[in-house]
Length: 538
Ligand code: F6P
Image (cartoon, rainbow, N blue to C red):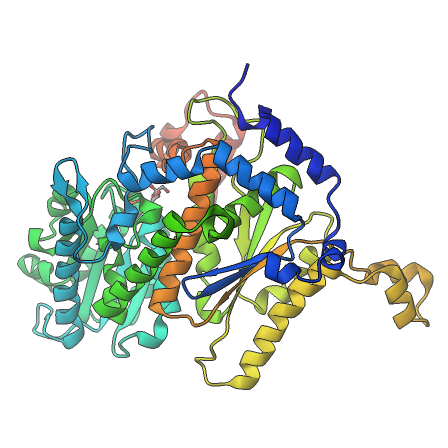
């Protein structure tokens, strides 16, 4: 007897439904009101999932699956601060980071919401000082360049948000994100930077990540080399970390450490002190608006009936596509240039969270989990990988993300952008069959016609935001966070650990010298051969 969800009767029901599911085209024919029946709105955004390949009975069966897997109870457990990240014995409370100022949240005998707001005040005071020019470098000059040094969740979130909210940025501040241990990343960022006016924000939850510490040490050496006295380094370095001791051990002044807590996971930390670069760039008010937008989505996720609950619906659509239709990838196509880093952000959120193959009880799953996620801003993606989306042998569902507002003030561009977005999802859903192609191109040889056929029946959802603002961006990120959580509950996996990154880290430590003595007898011939070839080439 196994406890896997895939062995429950409802899983078989869904498998049977998948085997007989109608095409998207037929689903539209059968229900002229399909858009009204398969769309939902919340927090300033509309989710249109009418172009997914499912009918009302399948949707209600998926909702039953969600209830069977106790999504509502697990949601309550997460919001209540139970240690649902059981492999690390940690609560998962990133939602507390966006509670309104007057809310309280008791955890382990403390009002942690008050601690959160204390750090938010610290962020506000510091970011105001830097932005207004009151915070001075060691030679008395105001800060003009900010370099965020961090990786993974300590880079992708703030970077994605700063690009998205660029219209609110303070124009006289240059912002760089340095993540890669490849020294070129840091040297490129520092190429035009003036040490007298540069501030380094060292972002690392653990303050032990090799890439970040290596970059931070080199940055400090750059400052010292430029003549900054060691005692004045505090004017140029701040740290964002749960490990205050390690940050101060690195030489960062205790008052320059912005703390957060272990109950906020790395890829869920953009709401914490990790957001300092956002506040520096666009201001503390905008950062707090983003938190408010995320909180609105938290409330929706907790209160809306599952049938109208955006994160739950998106999670179920993903489960349907991945586990029952066998469509195991997900393309993210934001039709807004400022959301260009959203796919990269969601790669970590979805794949580091749910890229797991054992259940919470440690059983090997016999079903697929996280989607293989990739994407690119539209319309760029259309001229790159969309060929596969339209005609490839693998079918890849897509999340289109569009914004109605034309904040660029160029209506011709905005119309073209949005028209393309609608056209792509329509083409994917409905395609163009051989008869249509033949009728359109009577002069083309019969053997060439199949090349121009679009099978269609390729599922997509469209998320339509009224505007791209700090508030709507916060809600959008929180929507995906909760979607990922709901999927983890259905798949019975822990979305909040990431043991899969450990093996590579420790092997890199063994190999760090790249010298012959790094070679161990047990290494395979490929690793040994590559080490030898590297030595020779160097
Ligand atoms: O890749 C593993 C990971 O731990 C991510 O989860 C995290 O976002 C990233 O490394 C950076 O970690 P830290 O913020 O502790 O430097």
